Figure 1 (tube, one colour):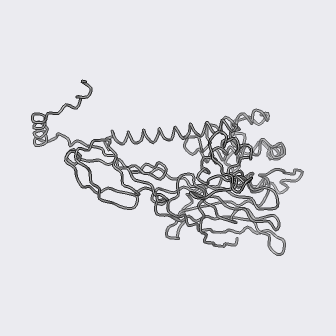
Figure 2 (cartoon, chains in turn purple, green):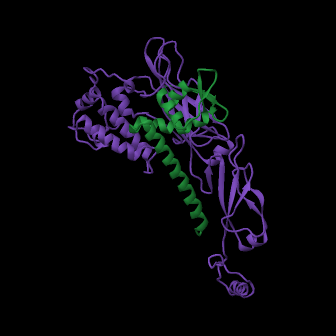
Figure 3 (tube, each protein chain N blue to C red):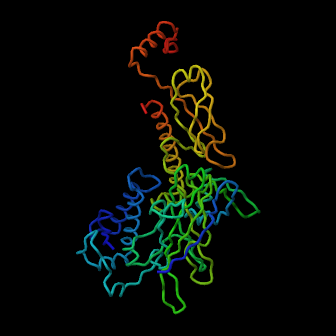
Length: 331
Length: 108
C-alpha cells in the first residue's frame, strides 16, 4: 500500500490552519466535483480530496496522521506502525469499521471482470482504511440498521438498450462464531434491465453494510451513467443520429438503411429533403413506457468534382438548373 | 479469504415509482427542510398520499441527487444548488446541440 500525502493532495502546508484546509478543499472540490467538472479524472481526484479532507478537517485524525511523521513521501510503500492507533480514539462517520469496498467489472458472458464500470462514492483508499477503518460517512443512520452504499456504474448506450450485467465484488468484514473477524468477498452479479437512463438509480436490497445488531442490512444503490456514443447522441430516451446522404438521395427521395440501437432498419427519405432535416423513427430510442424515438438528421454530402465526368455534371447543373442558394438573402 | 457468489435482480427506481419523502432524504443526502424548499422552488412536485405522507416521483431522483451532492460537497445552499443544477443542465443541452451541429458541418 502506498503512503498518501494528504497535505499535498489539498495543496496546503503541514502547518496549515483549519480554515486554510477548508478553503483549499472548497476550491478544489468546486473544480473537480464529478457533477460539475470537465477535468479528466475528475472523479478520482475528487475522491482523493474527500479522503484527504476527511482526515485533515478532523483534529483527532489529523493529529494521528501527523504522528506518522513528515518523512513519508507520497507513493512510498507504507505499513502502519505496530502500535498504530494507541492513544487516539476516532469518532465520527468515516472512521467506523464495517464498510464494504467495491470492485466492479462488466461481463455479459459471465467470465472476466475488467476492473471498470463501477466505483463507490466515498469509498476511501486502503491507506485510509488501514489507518482509520473502512466505511463511508453517509448512510441510513441510527437504529442499528446497516448503512446504504452508493456506487456509480458506467454502461454504454447499446447496453442500456438491450440490458446488461455487471459483476461487483463486495468485501465485507464478518464476525465468525469464535469471535474473530474474517474478510469475506461477495461476488454479486447484477442484471441491469433494458431501458435505464442517465442518473437512474438501481437498488440492490440488503447489499449495503450489515446491521450492527438485529437491524436490517443497508441497501446498495448503483447510479447509472451512460458513456458517450460514437454515432448516437442521447436526450432522455431519444437518440439522434447524423446520417450522410448523397444530393440525389435527398433531392429525389430514396430508401436507405439506417443504424439504430436495435440493429439496422430501412427508412424512406422523402423527395426534396434538406441537409439538417430530422426524420423520426418512432420507438427506436431507449426502451421504456413510452419508448424513446430515434431522430435521423440528414447531412447532404457533395461528391467531389475531382474527375472530368463529375465536373461535367456540375457544369450541366449550373447551366440547366435555375437555382440560387442565396435567393432568400436577396429579399 | 472466503468467496461467496450471489446473483441479484436489480430493481430500477424509475417511471411509475413514488418514494416516501423520508426515503428521498436518505437517498439524496437532503434534510426534509431542503426537500420542502425544493418543492417551493418547483424542482420537485410531491404528492400527498395518504394525507400527511408525502411522496416524490422516482424520476426526480437523478436531479435531487445532484443537488444533494452539490450541497454536501460544495457547501452551497438549496437555492444555489438548484440554480447550479439548472445551469449544468443548460450547459449539457448546449453541448449536445453544438455536437449535433459539428457533426452536420464536419467532413466525417
